[in-house]
Length: 93
Image 1 (spheres, rainbow, N blue to C red):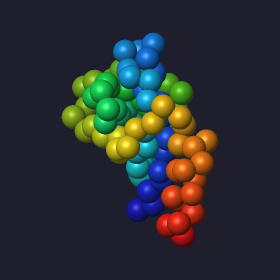
Image 2 (image 1 turned 120 degrees about the vertical axis):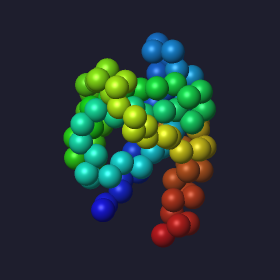
Image 3 (image 1 turned 180 degrees about the vertical axis):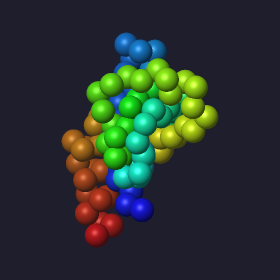
Image 4 (image 1 turned 60 degrees about the horizontal axis):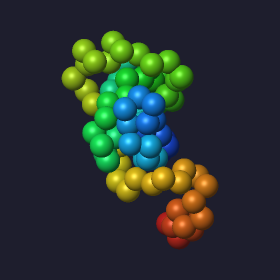
C-alpha cells in the first residue's frame, strides 16, 4: 500500500500549538479520521479521501477510535519551505 508524507498545521485558532508536523497517509484512508499533533496532542477531525486530507472538518471522527498520530519533529516553519529539511530529503535519495 502506497504511503504519502503529508504536512499538517496545528492551527492556534482551534486550540492548537501553531506548529507544522508531518504524517503518513495511505491511499486506502477514506472517511472520518482524527489526526493528533505530536507536540500538543490537539485533535484535528478531518475527512480523508483516498489518502488526501480534504478541507472538511468532520466531527464524526470523534466517534472513531482510529487516530493518526503526527510525526516528530515539529516546526514553526512549514517543512516544504525549510532549506535544512529540503537538504535532508536530498541526502536520502
